[in-house]
Length: 315
Image 1 (cartoon, rainbow, N blue to C red):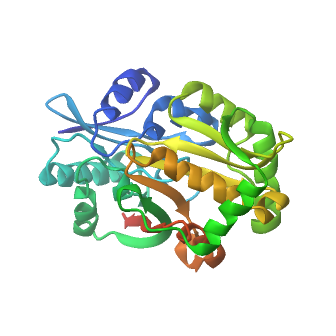
Image 2 (tube, one colour):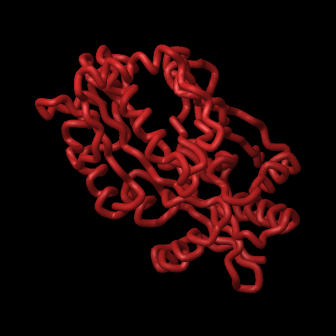
């Protein structure tokens, strides 16, 4: 087996490989990963066995902490693997990875974020065993709420009342390309409620929408006068639909605009997708649960899926 560092010349080979992997989404396509390449020192790695790719690791180097990170521009990552890879081969990948980090990169630690199991289309937890074998420490665990569409828990009475309010307002849910308006709503919500801001700019949203028109969709809840009262930017990740952002205006919150939007997504994707993933409702590495956020998502039938973060100490 061999390990090589990814370069731009490998983009076509990389992208062809991830389309066939058992635990991949379009977020690992280099056209997605590289839109913010100026923010990170890429150190993605490619593992070959008899010159055939068996795994890749989307990663970057954080020079300040002397760390190889599962790519910090992505929510999850870890080894993205061929369906044919075996447990022993994954152990071999980790051995090569650790040796490379020590001898070639001279770094102190590896931060590894495995992809949550719902995103895999075949059992893919070999790296969890490899983390155990290499004395990795669990340093973060986020709790996300996911809906299992084939066995959907009935929404709460509160959420159903919200839908009725929105229908009384004659709101309409539809796909839109009005990213600036949605971003303004989102920015207001994140700034006032969470003292933060969106990860993506409107220009970046539009860029990714142009690169991945089938995989990214913006949906809005619109009042009869055409104003957007709620919206969500949705990522189609194969068997999972992920709501990258969810936000509503003050009026939209009071009139059930977000409730109608989410119920519409559930109806739209039931029968074609396995899960809707609302994303984590935790803060500070999972040490704080945002109870209100979790309560809202659980009201639609969402239940817990973990987003983990592991550390391998190389010193």
